[in-house]
Amino acid sequence: MWSFLFRKQPDAPELLRWLHSIIDSLQDLEPAEMAKGKSFPGLLALFTLTTTSRCTYGVIEQVPSTASKVGPVFRELRAYFDCLWQLELLRRCDTPDDEQKVGKLYAGVGFRTMFIANYLFEAHPRMKRILECAFDGSYNQCLGTAVREYVQGRREFPVAETGDLLKDNVEALTIRVARHGNPGSRALPTLKAILTDHTTKALDLVYLRDFDFANCEPISFPPEWLDPP
Image (cartoon, rainbow, N blue to C red; front, top):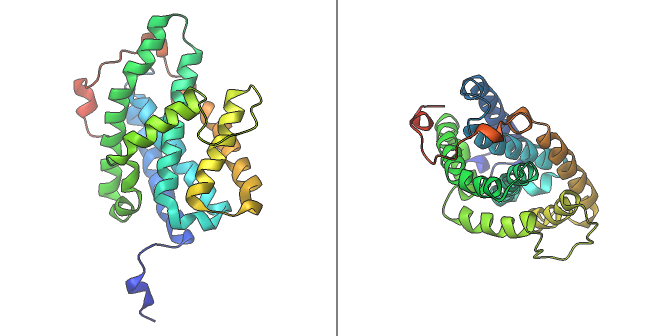
């Protein structure tokens, strides 16, 4: 009867409740972040955190065996969605200067992501220990690997390339998440379907879909970024 006192890792239903609370908190931030304008780069931070949280929820809900590795799974998904918004903005680029602008945006977006994450962890302290590996020093290495994987298409593990980068990226992501979560081969089609669905939905999320890339300024730390979420 006292076993719950010694449980180090919450089970899937408990993680889903916590993730649902984080998703709700992110949604509550939307009006204030959107009010800063469609060219506010902080919207890309909200994009990454929202898509990562929703996708992690979907993965755990449909493939509960991944719950024991929720931290590494969340970190992998954060890196993927950080790359996804960069890929979408690169698609909109008309000049080499535009492409350089995408790269310059990341420092400020990463800072804002950390700022919002700290706010979330204050409101949901139980999740901090579980997800901290997605925000500590190990994330930079994970992101570097993700850029090579998803932006440059340099695969760590071979996939059957189709020529469609987004489709091939989902295939690669499925392999990478499976290596963390170890869902078993029978669950791989389900996992891939979840990641495909969340990728499609992410590209239509208002924070990215309506982001005014042409008029955004890649200033690393403008004063308004220090405002509380």
